Image (cartoon, rainbow, N blue to C red):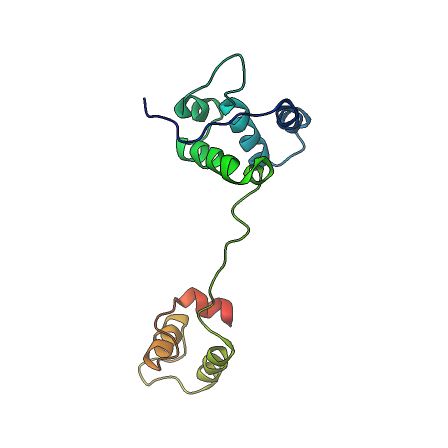
Length: 145
């Protein structure tokens, strides 16, 4: 059996908070699942500890989800472990204001002889050809337009 990387030791107040989430049933399914995982992972009980696979089976989830919830709880605290994905995640935009202006000008301009009209893929390829960006996905072009 692999050794656990993160051990959860809940205080009585934290345990009550998680049990309240499950008893009320008003919280999102995501929050309830994470609360259930943390309660099952608690090593501060009379029952001892369960393996990650036992927790996953009991909570109807994957082992990777159990490991991730436990890691977030240990590193960032209980409240953060109950939340959805990382809110601090940053997305870097491919097109800045100047790039967007070039995209719009390209759309308004003439299309090449080989095509009847601009497609998102053609626009993406043309932006790369014009060296506006190194690479761009047609979906990014769609969202920008």
